[in-house]
Image (cartoon, rainbow, N blue to C red):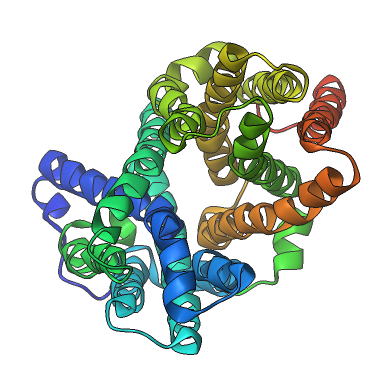
Length: 404
């Protein structure tokens, strides 16, 4: 047990589970809030603090470094103490470190708080994900993962708008949104079930073990993390290079560009609601194959077409793949990791996500410099196609993850 007073789920299972679900979905929203709410004020920060573009960009990305590095330790903490207490502490740290930007005018101090914020975000990412996995089983778990995907995608649309509105007050104002983590952390202590209330079994505290032993004993996880990194790399590539591609065909008005870049999140939010039915029909590995095929088609279209209509359709199609792959990979981690080390396995999924985000501009940016923006999207399509081919080989060989 976590050493915290029993949650309401102990006396009212239905009401308690609904409250826990609401808290975990709200926490999932905070994972996308991490950078999205600040995007509209990056230029204001750059001008106010007299920064280079790269230095200003670190305000958005610095937390990704500490998040990825903290992942293994976060996983060990969750395996040892359960989800509730680490998640609650992570939410409070997330709120305080993120909200520090309200009163910070020093760039070094701002970056320091963003790095500390990343540790809190790592606890939130892993804790909310594992909390949902523990709260449900079977088809109900698939539905919950679809709801999580929808919550994340809607946050990707709404939080930049909120940041833009608050940025009209000052560049400090959007940092205040992070403070929601503090009361949410306190609520988490009250409503989230303890370790023994998780669905399925009474999971004992996890035994210490190296990352190598986890991956050696459960090799399917290596492929899952690889797919997650590729997915993140491709998503970031679309978000970064789509505005440049649009400018090449004469689409530069900010509001119009926002429609194009918001299309993936919109379709992702819709598709996520149907994830459970899609998985039941296709099976998990075939669903992943469909996702990679969708990515390939969307990226080839962006690389070859000059039609504004097709350039709107392609990101929307890409979002269909995202709506399927985000819950699919999360569920696969749960299915291919031992219950006692599932926190560590889930935290590594976050590390793979942010590793993909970190590598994306380096890899795809190099391709763009050597070729063109069209070449960048075609390179992304090639990566998705090669990944699909590797998955097909494993599927034919019967070595892929469970197709349940």
